[in-house]
Image (tube, rainbow, N blue to C red; front, side, top):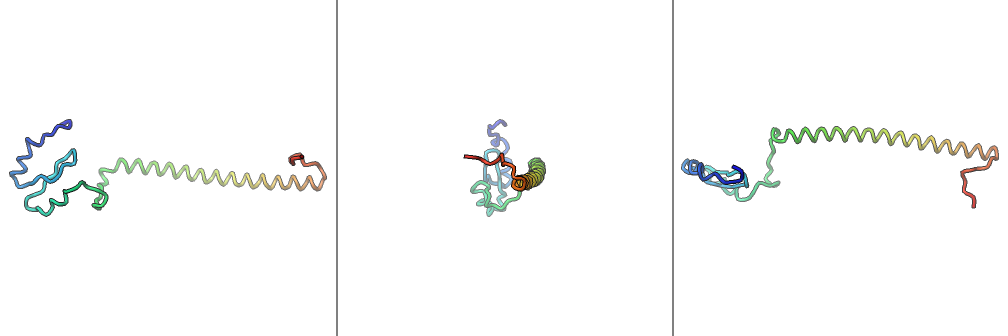
Amino acid sequence: MGGNPNHHGWEPLLLVRGYTFAYFDGLNRFYVSNAHPELLPSFSYPPCIFDDYEISPLSTAPISRLLKRRIAELTEVHQKSGAEIARLRALHYATSVGLHLYRAFQRLLGTPNYNRKTT
């Protein structure tokens, strides 16, 4: 193993049993039965997105669990952010109302507005 080809020892066993070498992906060697030579063109290029293949849920289970956990975390963050935005909007509204009331009382009472800029 370790990146060293070792198929020379066992490949002849497949070839004499009616299989033809079809494809090597850098790790695995693929063979097609001589009874189905029509399958050989399918191995003329590497698998790609256009092959409409499906990944086994068993092989992607760890990634799927990780993604589900991350989605749950982000959903919680999103919900908390929404609540915080609502709280800040309410605070802004209350502050605006308070400021308008303060200014209205100043006008009624004739007290100076210390918040206005003077030139």
